[in-house]
Length: 544
Picture 1: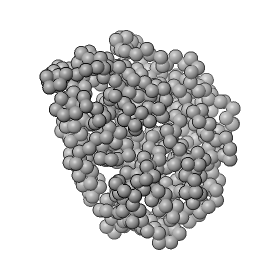
Picture 2 (picture 1 turned 90 degrees about the vertical axis):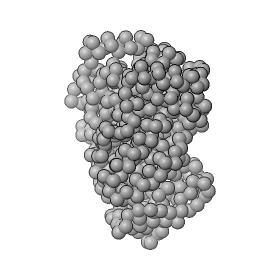
Picture 3 (picture 1 turned 180 degrees about the vertical axis):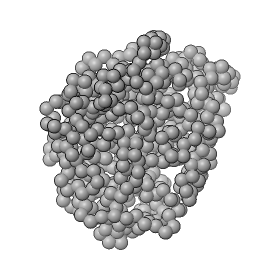
Picture 4 (picture 1 turned 135 degrees about the horizontal axis):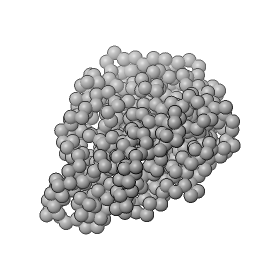
């Protein structure tokens, strides 16, 4: 994911080899030796194939908060609003969303919407789905997104009393406080509707979901776990992005090098990210079929709050030292061929309101002398014992940069640091969620909706669905509430800067870099376009 420059020069290639030669790890990725899945070229003349990852959870909108499942849900479901390629918010299932005070919203559905099983999309389709997603005992990963609605509770089962069905096409939403940007969030998958059949057996529904989006699952054989999933056009879809192809096959690859080989061979139509081995050459190899553009993506190292070595004064000093020990500029150049931009905060420059002037963000700069001093201060309080592990999934082509980060930390701080690899993305996510990771871990974020606060609230608010470091700071939480109650984007973004200053004091995550949308497509497809958040606009792709 993420690159900004074209071809690798001989000097850059040499620099990369020298950097990696000093890194730990066996470097078992990137050989394209057939360990990964290979796309089936017989998917169908008009069926578009794209790389993906096995969803961590059943395909229930509120259960899914990772990209592998989320990208598939976005093909199968349509929300009240949708995001156009540039991030503009437009109505989709909603005919109108009206409010006089930014606290009570009246939502009217457009006529004619049905699920792919023929049942109508009604007000209850949304109200029942949101109540299910918010209910504590249902343990849904995206329950946090309903926190703004009256009646929400993170401590006990509670109905969303702020939801009221007026008639089949109208319902109202009352929030606990005014929030000007509430409608902007309603295109995210947590707010998708569900048909009545879902509530008869939610577990079964997650294996064979019925949605209202541009695609649907075929009658049988759609999802072959850890291999691929097929979707076909949904003829009942009446929204703004109808399928222009015969379907989509999402192929779950074990490594991106195998996917890239398939792309070059014409056995895969689209890739939405590139292996590190191809970053210096893919634009030359693919020509005008290469994609390299800004997107709302970033990468951090998350620091679990439950680890004793990162608690207290010594823990803060260690977090600061680790951040200052990472040579982001060199890694961006040598590993990513200059295709990522070193981060200066916890957000991304492509979202309106971004500023590089955040108090405390000097901690995102490489300063080996200061890093060593802070580590020594921490050692005087409590000596470090053992190896710093950096955990991630092995099927996502992260080894090269994690080895480089580990090497930068090792050389600067004089400690052992190494990549802890989990074979599959879903295994890594399970270990993360179960607090089984013993060091820091990779935490990439692709925006849910175009807002700076989306890079903060879901990740660092107490109890939020993507707060995988289990971080908690009441002052930060209060600023998130103030942001929600802001009267304008400008006011909200000023508070975002204050909130980021707190994050730089606590460092629950260590910002690394901002990523571009980097990918490409084969000669068999046309009209391939990457959206503001890196997602490929698959319904508009044509083939054959």
